[in-house]
Each structure stands twice: as C-alpha cells, then as structure tokens.
Amino acid sequence: MAEPTRSYHRDDLRKQLVEAATDYVVHYGHEDLSVRKLAQVVGVSPGAPYHHFPDRRSLLIAVALTGYDRLLRADLGASPGSVEDELLGVSRHFIAFAEENPRLFSLMYESELTRPVLEAPIAKAQREGFAMLRDAIKAVGEPLPDETLGIRVAAYWSLIYGFTLMRRNRMIQPDQEIEEPGSFEVVDAVLRQAVRLVKG
Image (tube, rainbow, N blue to C red; front, side, top):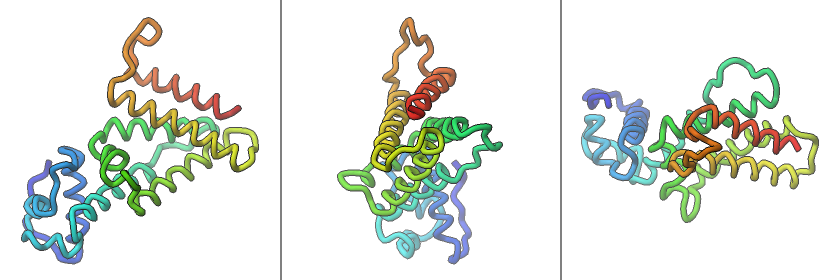
C-alpha cells in the first residue's frame, strides 16, 4: 500500500480520501477502517475527513460505489463477435472482479451496506448492473414477455453470483468429473452452459 500522502489541496481532498479508503479496503478489508484511521493514512488532521464524510457508513458507501464504478464501466476489450460473446464477456468480468478484489467485493455485496436493507445508492448501482445484464440476456434469447424475461435474468444472475461465491469459498471440490474446479476452463464451461440455458 502506498505511503500516506502529506500534502493535499482542499478541493480534491474528497477524491484523495476515497482513493485511499478504496486502496485500504482492497488490501485489508473494510471491517477495521474508520474515518480517523483514514485521516492518518492520507496524512490530514483527524477532523478533515468529516467535512466530506459525516460518519464511517457514508465513507464505506463512497468506497463501495467506487467498486461498482470499476465493475460496471470496465473496458472489456475488443468488441465481441456475437451477442453470446458479449454476455460471456460480462459474466467473465464479474467473476474475475470478485476474485481479484475479494475484500472490495465483500463490501459491495456482503456487508452492513447490503443488509438488512440495501443502502439507496448501493441499490441504484445494483439496479444499473442488473439492467446491463438484462439487456445482454435479452439480446441472446428469443423475444419474451417482460415478466418471463425478468425471471430468466434472475435465474442467470443467481447462477453466476452463486457460482462466484462457491468459487470464493472453495465449495466446489475436485472429483472425477471436475479435477480442477478453480480453473478458468471450468469457469468458461459453466458460463457457456448458463448462456445456453438463457437462450431457451
């Protein structure tokens, strides 16, 4: 993790705070992060961050939204060759993001910001991601009534999210059928099977 920054401009302090907090969460998780600790990391007075974040929860929301921004606006590379490839690319990116940023992912999807009730800004970001997934699935399959399409999207999302959590928690154990459940070959095979299911 980078050394604390000792100089700053008041106008961009909020940006520096969010960047430092996000970096902290990526490396150490969010559980021990406090506004006071963040001030120490950035190298400002203990009260300075409170001009931008009145409490720890508002700080964590800003970090989580940074994570969603990285997840939803990532450059996935060259244009896919087909609508199926686009859906596969989006799905691979989600799984890769979760594996490369496990602590940030936990804040975004499995923290006090998501239960017992989703924080409004988090819910908005998740709806945006769901809409992107819905558009990709809609392009893959045959025309469907909105309710049927919604059920299909929920089923696909449940599969991808559940598969991601099972990989993170090492719940897919090697056996005769799947010798290396953590391999990207297995990820690709599971995703292709999921795409076939949503095509109908």
